Length: 350
Image 1 (cartoon, helix red, strand yellow):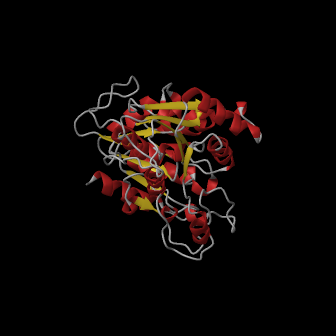
Image 2 (cartoon, one colour; image 1 turned 90 degrees about the horizontal axis):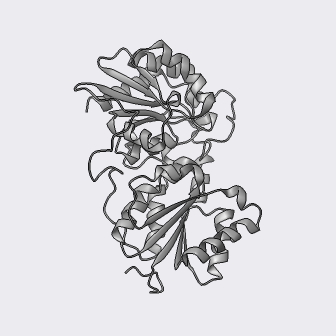
Image 3 (tube, one colour; image 1 turned 135 degrees about the vertical axis):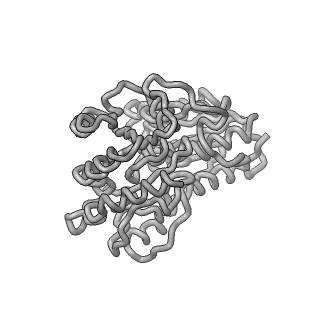
């Protein structure tokens, strides 16, 4: 039975991460092995409702709660949520993988109840030095920071994570066709939440056009929502071997099954890179305002597969949400389609 730093036996642990989809996806390669390595401990992971569907094939001792945060607004909302969860599960400890005001209020309420708290060190000062051009030294990865939280609680970290489908082949999915011998499947995720992390679509179309000519190549365009579906529609209609996922009704589990059959993903620094990591799929990731040195490279993804320009102004942002100081987003627009195609070819040839 796991014990915390004060030698208290742990039976029930709350894990918190309320944030963007990619940040939540990054918890899985750490949380799943921790749960499997501590079978006598029951874990409850509280996250946003939209992220709940990612946690497929989860360990038997892990409950994932998708929380509707609109029900817990204001300063009192997070404390109310924490106390509701404590009343329901009676936690011994909290692994706070987020460390924002919401989770600080939750841990405050639970600490008052005698619950042991372990909180992530996000390395904000080190990341600020990177974005202000004071250093080029990479910071500790987010995955390593997640591990450190569970280590604080005296929990075993478990074996290295490879894939959510590591116990066997991925299950069947109605959206995944049969893959013929010799076919090469490429997933392309051209969108991101922020302009500084998104390769211009007109340039991405040149990349897709060239890849569509490759022998036995099938391309799957990733996206969500009507806006992205409308943007991808003319691209899909132009090529017989290109399929747009937003045009097909499917679940997050279906998407992960599809990715498990692909040979490579072309993606931005976005949630899709982390979804690829969940099934052991190599990703060619395109970086603009952000930088792998800030610690958000996907699990087991290689720096050699990143596409980025070495500019003095990079990185200007940890999350890519700041406006370009020059207004032209050259960090993205300056990347040639040929450079991306070369990286994708190298992965396919391995």
